[in-house]
Image 1 (cartoon, rainbow, N blue to C red):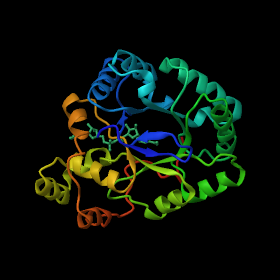
Image 2 (image 1 turned 180 degrees about the horizontal axis):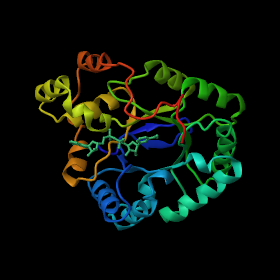
Image 3 (image 1 turned 45 degrees about the horizontal axis):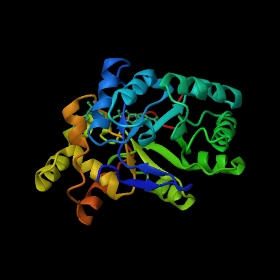
Length: 273
Ligand code: NAD
C-alpha cells in the first residue's frame, strides 16, 4: 500500500514514502519527476526554497492525475530566510511559487544559530492560522531540540535528518520518539553510495529486490519516513515497489550494524551557509 502513513503528534497522516527533488532542475526535469511519482502512487513530495524548483513542483502537481488535497507537500525555510518576519515572508513566497494556498509540512531547514527559535515562532503562528497542517525541523541534533523545546509552544511534528545504514543516530531517533517527533530520512540512498556496498548486493539477491528497495524497506520497518530522490521514471516507480516483502529482524539488525557515523552531507553541528 503505497499510501501507507505514519500518524504525526497532531493526528495528521504523513505518507511514509515521498519523492525527494533536491538537484532536480526547475522546469521539465522536476515537473516530470513529480508527475511520474504522483501518477504511480506517490502522495508526498519533498522540496525546499533552497532547491529553486518549487515552481516546477507546483506545475507537476497540477499536471498530475492527483488532486492537490491528496498530496502531502513539504517545503523548507532556508537559512538566509530565518527569523520571525523573514520566515513569514519566505512562507508566502514559497506558497506563491508552489501555486498553492497551504502546506502539509513546513520545515526549518537547518538550526541557524541565534535565529531558529524566532523562525519556529513564525511556524507556530502559521500553523495556528491553519496555513500549514504540520510543522517541523530538519538537521536538529538533540541539543538543538532541547534548546528549542525550552521556548516552543508546539512540539515539532517531524525531524528530517540524514539517515542511512552508515548514519543511524539511534539515540536521536529514540529521543525524537520519546518526544513524539516523527523521524524522517534524507539521503536514504547515501546519495547513490549505497549501490556500491557488497552487503546490499547480497541482500538484494537474497530477497530478489533492488538495493534501493531493500534500504527503503529498512527505513519503513524502523518507522522512519523516507524520501529517495530520482528524476528517472523507471527508478521512481521501482523505488516505491517495497510493500510486497519484509526484511527479517536479523537483516534489519544487520543494516543497523553498518552504522559508522559517516555523513555524506553537512554536519548540523558545523555548517556555515
Ligand atoms: P538520495 O540518497 O535519495 O540519493 C539520490 C541518488 O541516488 C541520485 O543520484 C539518484 O540518481 C540515485 N538513485 C535513485 N534511485 C536509484 C536507483 N533505483 N538506482 C540507482 N540509483 C538511484 O539523495 P538525496 O537527493 O541527497 O536525498 C533525498 C532527498 O532528501 C532530497 O532530494 C531532498 O528532498 C532531501 N534532502 C534534505 C536535506 C536537508 O537538509 N533537509 C539534505 C539533503 C537531501
